[in-house]
Length: 260
Length: 310
Figure 1: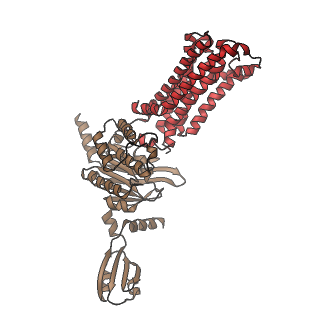
Figure 2: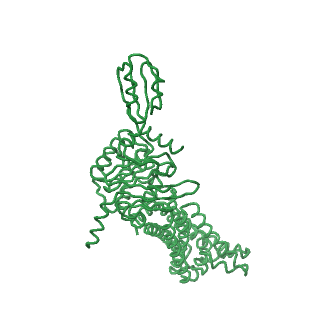
């Protein structure tokens, strides 16, 4: 791995990452603080199952349901996916479109090492956000009166980190293979959003229920980590996707011409 | 090192700095580089000349393994441009034609990063180059002018004392004083036995600094030769001042004469080949002065360019 490349990628992306991390903690603290006041009042929403699924069950009457609907199903994956995708898409495709990559690759570094360095930097960014989610949930749950164990909070943060790794690896692979930042961003964002939609709607239709197994979102949240703790199979699946796509990124990047 | 290893290194030292064999990169629709056979000797300053789109940058990107050839091969410093690219890039300095750098970083941070990618760069050499080019290392790249960014590009290309420098349009955006510093640096580098392969469409620059040059057009090599030989075949011009007006048509009819311009009692005669016929025709009149005009590379370039177009 090329450590200077990893360090520079981190340095360039750290301000936005830390800003997002602080924002996440603040939002989760606020969400937790709101629970005693309005959570019990709202209770479990009486909405169609499809809408309830979109909202992570729409059970606002319990602290677990409250954080599942507010953070675990929407806000957390949205922020971590956004940072992982933008970071990974910028990593090679962005530098290539900005015409920096030709100069970098004229130095004695292997393309595979550069991809590994970028992937490592994106992984650190994802871990920072997952850690912020962990801190934010601990603070938020405490402000909300407690009711979720540290182990369950840790489980969500870990599942979320692996979701971030896998989502980022889609952008990394497409970006490394095509040199196009917009395509990398679009592909990964589409996979993330479709995954969320499929997990909400596919279970309602038995003939397409199997589609959820093709989504990253299922392996992140299908097991409901806030309620049931860590899902080892989900972690393994997301880890394998991440490793496979990173390997694919390296192979594709090694073989092709730089476009700019 | 084993005896065979020593022999292998010795063989490589005898190899030219750059050798391409039928090197081709076909982008389709007639664009790319086609069948380039080229040798650049060690210690040479070699000019690669051609208009935009001629294939100069494509050649350089092929040499550095940034793009892969459709066919043919290239060797740099005796090493295969594809299989041994990592070792080549360790020993080569490159300035891309469309230089871009990290806009948020200062010049110093950019150079530090690029030095880290190389592993070993003497900071004193980097600083002396910065001083030489009067480069501003403390402002973010996005605040720098094109010329100041180009200075950073030159510093990073030279700062590890590479054996071979591949420079794509190196003086683009530089002011004349910095250009002079750059040309002086090229002479020093050449005197040290290091090789410079530079492209340009600025003819005067190539003329000033190169030993030999190649002219490329639409991806194909038109000519490669020394400046001296190219001058021999170039159109020469003589300004001949006569005592009395003379008939210009007498000179137009002479063998090799291409153009005759009249300005009072002075004729400017452009001709190819030996000057014998022109001088003898002039000698039939009272000649007050004969002044040869210095040909520049533009004449040579345009001549080859016209011929290959035809």
